[in-house]
Image 1: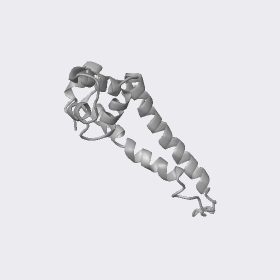
Image 2: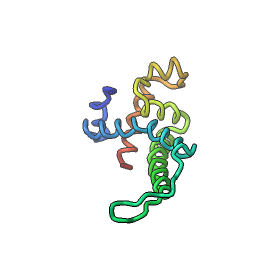
Image 3: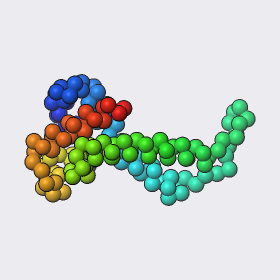
Length: 134
């Protein structure tokens, strides 16, 4: 996990709140994969099942609700990256949703066009903005 925990004090984000935000964002790729499974029809709806209370469940409705929940979470992270910086949003999104996407990796391998200080400043800003949303 990145060592920026102490650096977030300026944004009044505690160590544990930062860890919560960090782990929330680390689920982004799982959520995107689940959305893709739903959209590809890999979990095609069946006619429904009867619960122990005798109520028929609606698989299609359940999938629609799940899709809406996952989409909302992913959109919130994506929109927060864009609010943080419209030009560097893709790099910020990559940094906060993937382990090991450090400044060095993003600048040398992915060609991120900004300096070290700006990148870490924007990443802190991202967590600050996200903290206000969840």
